[in-house]
Length: 251
Ligand SMILES: [Zn+2]
Image 1 (tube, rainbow, N blue to C red):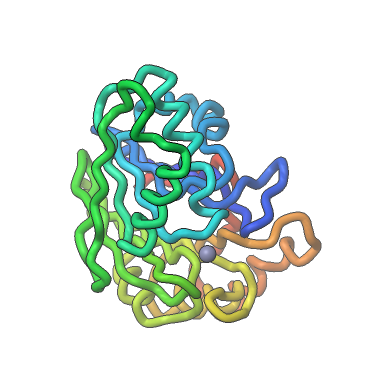
Image 2: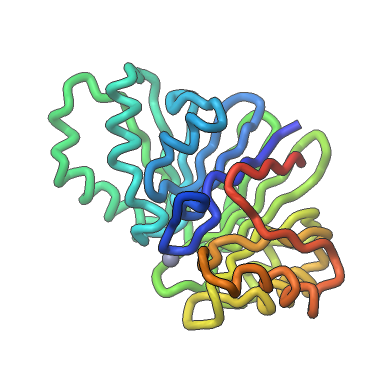
């Protein structure tokens, strides 16, 4: 049975207990990492996953709290002796900037650096990102301040679905991504342009008809954190959870 592990749950400012929002999926054949906030190596060590078990990385958008750990992760993989290829998926807007960023590090000159294949995803709804082991993953553009994708992760054997909103204001694309999902992982940064409140996350969960809502990408360390679940429960009758680092969701 595939498993999703929350590696970070914070919005843009992390703290010791909450890293920037990122997560991994054990597919049965490999490990898919979704985003690369501060230093994914440290979180992966805590869950007992060697960095070189990662087969695929999906980058949702080019904001520092989702991307900035990537150069060091790639270097760590290389220094740990990686030789096998790595696949990285994202929109052109994001991958172009990742290539430019790595260019500043002159990664073309790193001796015997392993092959990295970039897969540019079309900016359309429900595009297949990858199929591996027990899971199939699809992406759709969502409504953030720069081009950004949300994800739909389907388990083949159980038929269960996890949807992830990524950073977005309320939009139909997220409701569509979450159709028939047992779990919606939705951001709760607060109501603003390109973001959502816990109430808005609850409304999306209600409109999509999911069973469970996990709030993620929330401001950590302030007193409002404790009330987020209650706010979502006011509009959504399913189960509501506050995602925490190292939570595991089987599906
Ligand atoms: Zn963002």
